[in-house]
Length: 236
Image 1 (cartoon, rainbow, N blue to C red):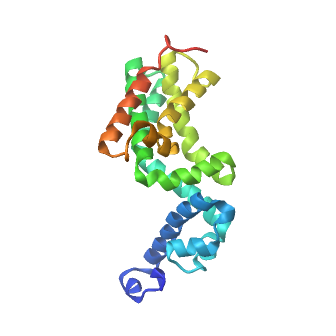
Image 2: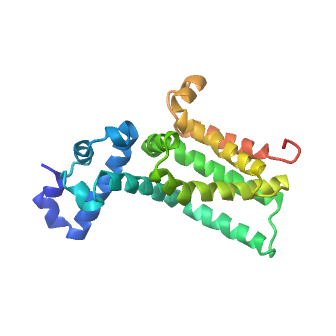
């Protein structure tokens, strides 16, 4: 019996609540199933079974498999945004002050903000919750679709631009320059590797898993990486 058919559930929740719950279950299941098998390999039956909902729920809520795939990508973006929203808003507000020439950011403050961003991203992506996100996003990196466009535009590009502006302050360069954009990609990638190359990380470091101790080590590495961003060490 599907969980959305339980009479007890209908007694406890309103129709809107049941529909929201079913939709959320489908999104969570879709991220995992699409990440494991890709769009073509994931059948609607497998998606419905993974979410423990009726097959008809997919066209009802998402107009079909393609709609569910796009919605899954947008759901990943919203989950990431929820974790970094407060920090992103705070940093962006500070950067806006720079552009208004009202309160310049020192290199010390820029480095502190950049360290906070990198530590936050490291902590988020080495956590178990990000594992299905990573599988989904890696597939999109290899063969981009509209789903990549949605995630890149709403999360990845704004984050990289924010990192780039802080790097530009540290290097005394234009944030729009190719060199700064390359540095932003390299810096973010240096912590993303702990999720993207998770198996290699464990094998190379002789770690059984990434727990609290390992997380703190990686956060410390993020600080070291930011400390290495300087005019002296910059090669254009």
